Length: 209
Image (cartoon, rainbow, N blue to C red; front, side, top):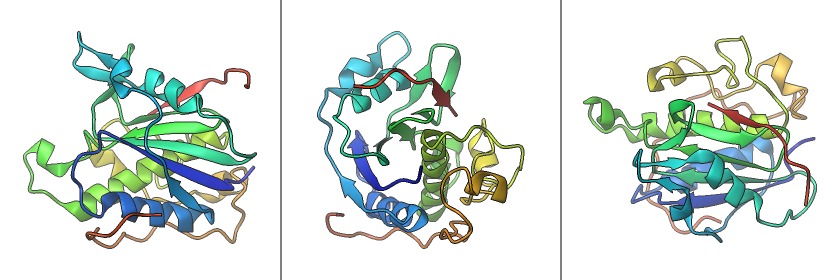
C-alpha cells in the first residue's frame, strides 16, 4: 500500500535552518503524498537511557505509534538530533515498524563535523533523506535489499550511505506501491536554505538500520 499522508515529528532536532523543510519537500515529491508537521504529543525523555547517555529508538517508536491512525496509508516519521540505540547495538540511524505506521530517524551520526570534517549541509541533507526514505520503506513492508545502489540497502557507517542512492530499485519499487511512475530521488538534493514553517492494532516487528 502506498503512503497517502506523512506526518513529520521533530524531536530535539536543534537549529538546522532549512533542513526540516527540505526533508519534507523531498519526501512529499518522492512518495507523492502530502506532508504535515506535528510536534511531539509525548515526552521524549522517557526514551533516554542514563547508563548509555542515548535514547532508546524502540521506546521513541512506541511513543510515535500511540498517535491514533488518521487513515489507511498514513505514516508517521520522527526526526531527531539525538543519538539512538537498541540494546543489542551500539547505535542505529533509525528504526521502523515493519509494514506498520511509524518510523524514526536520527541525524546525530550523519553530520560530517562529527568525523572531523567541515560542516556540509548538502551532504547532511542527502544522508538524512536516504535514511528517511529507507525507514519509510520498512513501513511499506520492504526489507533490506542486496542492490548496493538501492535506498533499502543496509548501512552501518555514514560513509556507506553516500554510496547508495535515495531511490528504490525496480525490485523494491513495485512492492512499495510506487510503480514505475514514481518520482526518483536519486539526484543530489539542493543545499537546504532557511525557510518559513513547513507545511489499536497488533504489534508488528521493528526494523533497525
